[in-house]
Image 1 (cartoon, rainbow over the protein chains, first blue to last red):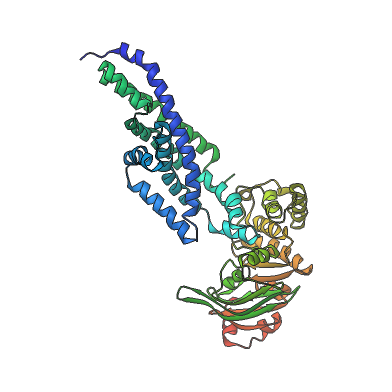
Image 2 (image 1 turned 135 degrees about the vertical axis):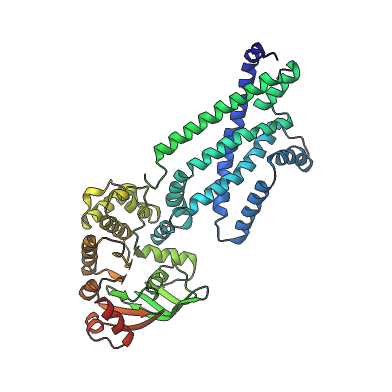
Length: 221
Length: 239
């Protein structure tokens, strides 16, 4: 078997551009996912039952169906509802954000529930509203505790974002496919793609380790 | 100041408070004693609605506890000190104390911190303003918790077993602060096992058992000449 190093060197810049797009989708999706997840996670703990139920339905639906199917749903089904074609970038970000939001919601819920309930009581007994206590007392403490699982979610999303290649969006995996279609160098390209993913996930997990050590994920400041 | 009428509290099938009525006058220090599970903490927690009564009426400083707005208003006037301090671990002592006056009363931060420093001096912890709760001993944490509650300038203070989680040598420093408060005329309701404190500082003692008020009266009367058998039995075990 011939291993074509030249092909790897030639394709590398193109693949790196794809990796840049992958990072972009991941950052945006987890960013929106954090926002969605925070509100949905809090909603799951609400005492108003329609709010609670809606949040539960969302989380169950997203976690109970494959991301690939969700991407198809948004890319192919949504245009029929909206009445116009959706840009693959918008579709990709929407699908990944909505997906990430459900997982982040569960992370937030767990983080909030792990805070001693005496904290909420102390806040309320001082006359602060539920929302104020959540914002100033509970969430800042919960945030520190959920740094490690959020890191995992980020890594998972980075890998799962390869699925948006199916709607023709040119992130790392899709770039690889396109190069292979042209050059037939599937082994060289896939090994390179895998290596780039590995470098990215490894970097993130080291960074999360650093954050975790820095914020000492126990109760301290 | 506080009037409680025919209060019932059920947790599922568990009937924790059975038709409790009580009254706490302004500047009065009422000590609530009783065996564990007698409902004394629950009674205290109903006063600021941390527990929602199943039935009955509570009026605090003329405000009936009915709507959510009233509950928040009452909580602004009623300070609470917990058995396990419940300080906010991610904030310094000063921030712990200044938070509620800023967020609830709309006080300026600088002014709130000034108030906090005065209160810290009062509880003897001026040098701990910038420490975090974990750096303090239990007794110090509880004194900060008292200062935090006082920062809202409450009209009533509720103490839920404030010394039960403390090492013996730290109990006195907390009781001393409470004594000072009582002498200054603060209206107080105290759930405690510290009978010395009850006799010395209490204006009235309420003995509870199995969700009811069994007996109440002047501390000396209750401690020395209890009328009820259950009170006598309880006191003989702890005195």
